Length: 174
Image 1 (cartoon, helix red, strand yellow):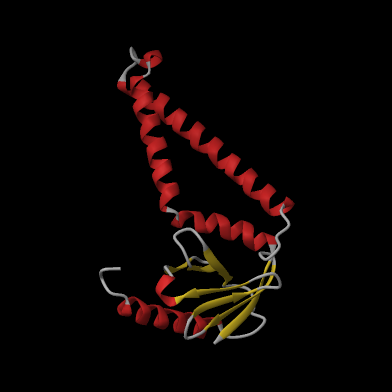
Image 2 (cartoon, rainbow, N blue to C red):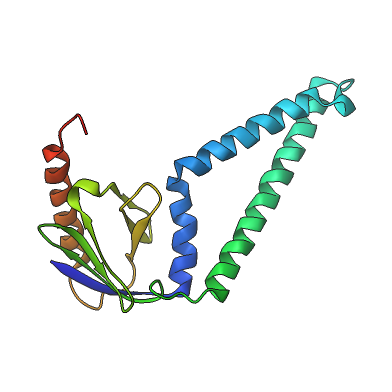
């Protein structure tokens, strides 16, 4: 079974932001940064004489400032990457095929095969399916756009079934 679809620069931008919520590494970095800011906010010598409420407000201010600045920087970097990057192999037509060997992806520039044993997971958002081939790399399929070929619902159901078979076939020692 196969599907064909197009990805635009806007799809890449929005999909990137939706996929970030699945990144464990990003969650860990944000948690560590948040804990550091909280610790620093309550132990900073500038507010050591302040009441608990004063230190809390100071800490919340720095949390919003740090995460707000980080968000804006990430947004700008992502937008610049999408706008200025060549997009070769990302923007344009994609074909995904489910074979006995695994998931095969083809574009005008690339052809790759990810075996069933190596595939990680399927994640779904309101606008995309993400077929994770590694911990941080996924094939992104828009849900709201019409496909050029194939049926998305049938493709996803068959993908889930093949993944289930592959997971049950992998020994617990691996």
